[in-house]
Image (cartoon, rainbow, N blue to C red; front, side, top):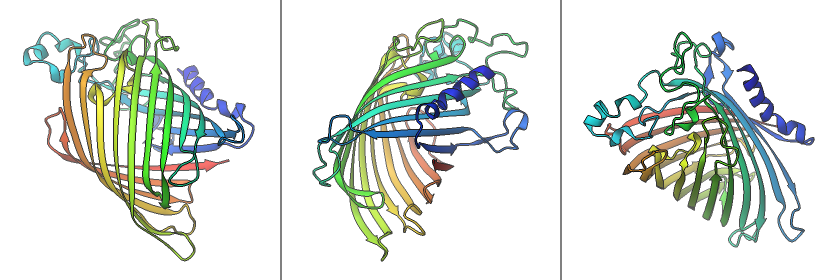
Amino acid sequence: MKKLLTTIILVCLLPLLVFADSFTFGTTIDGVSGGPNGFGFGMFPLGTSYSHAKSFSLLGNNFPAATFNVSTSFSFSLNYIPTEYSYKEGIPYWSLTPYERANEYSSLFWNGSSTYFNPRGNLYLYLQQGFGTNPVEKSGPLVYLRLAWNTLYSMALDANPIVPGLDLVFVDENGAPNGPFGPETNLPGMPWLQDNRIALNNNLALSTYWYLYKNTGTDAYDGAYAELTLEYGPSWLANTITPKGTISNYWKAYAYLEEKLTLCSTKQENGMNWATLYIGHSNSYSYVGGDVVPENKIPGDRLRHSFSDAIWIHLAGPQFIAGDCYTYIDLGIYNNIYFGNVVNEVSKKTQAIELQSSLRGLFHLRLFGFIRFDYSFGYVFNRGLYATGPGWWQSAEVSFYVTI
């Protein structure tokens, strides 16, 4: 295991060897852990990321500069085995009759300890070129065209004793395989957990980003922004790392449209922002196709189609001390509709439609650009397929960014 962890870290540090000039390094602490046997006294960071961007002329002086970007990240976090879907056939639990739950399919759903240790590393490369001129702002490109490559390497390991207090999942106390997780197993419903539980997912993506707006203040603009992405992760793109074969064989189409209208924008005497208020609205649609969809591309409740609608109010407070010291608050209503067949289901028979609705808020504090604090909260009043009542949730995150 030490060799595998070392390999992930070395892959993440690769850009340091490739580029000799400056790079941007960003670190996000997305949680804390006692570490192995309490190492770090509860302050061991679980994840970090950094990126490097290089601009150069690709098509000549009549076109904007092109950008080549390298971004890497790694994390040592916990994950869980989805208990709502059968590991062998991918059938959702909510689609079964009471008889099927109790008899025909009862043994195909994991009902033991489901939390496991999930170290992972990600490498993202893209080449981006701008075209045209934004007709609203009268400057900047109208559209960016981006070609990208993404690689995700992950492992599913028993958490104990790495994270004390968690039960064994994949082996028993004697080291024998637990349930369906023996060597050379085939788990169509959860391909990232089959065989040796090492998953390597590669995909190619072609994206366009359209800019039809003008800036009106801090984090605000009037106009529209659009995005269209086509993603492809076939089995022949080194997505057959396990002896049992395919770990990924999918494609995805994604479209996004956003509009904003500034309601108020005032400045201080020194030119810094005093207050900015705008209303925003967005829609998105995505479809995930293919017979083997990897874990990091599973759509909401595994239904292939998704459509979202959101409307929110954004209030940015005064800049203080420096331009990158300010706060903002978002408050909005978000609706998501999921429908269609269930991904990774062998029979491809199950179909469903669901609506999820919630009220969400965000408080963001930025200090000198390198310290950011986010506090999020929400009230879910429609949970879709799950017949549970409404409820509140909250989370917080501190991020640190350093440029060298």
